[in-house]
Length: 166
Ligand code: SF4
Image (cartoon, rainbow, N blue to C red):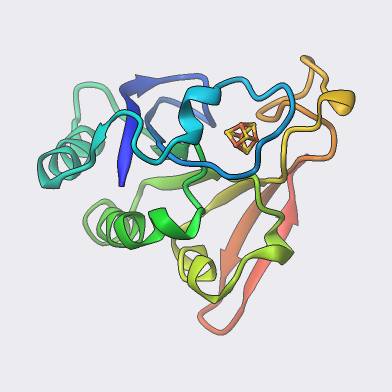
């Protein structure tokens, strides 16, 4: 997996102060996409063990306390990206259990296949759906168009529940 950008300190993409990773690769082709550069899976640079270690180090940083990790893109839930991101989210929850994980995806939650669903037990908030230009509204919080939904994800060990936040 490649990534386009990593912000070690970010106060825009989710609640609180966060680490944010913008991954490469998206096949949704939304009209009016804010970042068409992110569509190519070969854009940006390779996500490697050093980058993963840097994220964990930043999340553990006590000088600037982070609430959690945000994954955006591109599409972090594209099947091509799961192989890399699943071990990352598992490691974050194992080594930084007090940190939350927010994910932006162009897929609707009910469209996720079995591979993509493996990410869900580690995600705290998911913002789903393509950007739809005709429903765009700059006043919306954490989403670009009104069709997109922000869900809090809870896992009781047997099932995953999605509670709309907005
Ligand atoms: S899902 Fe996001 S990155 Fe992908 S085309 Fe739509 S707006 Fe662009």
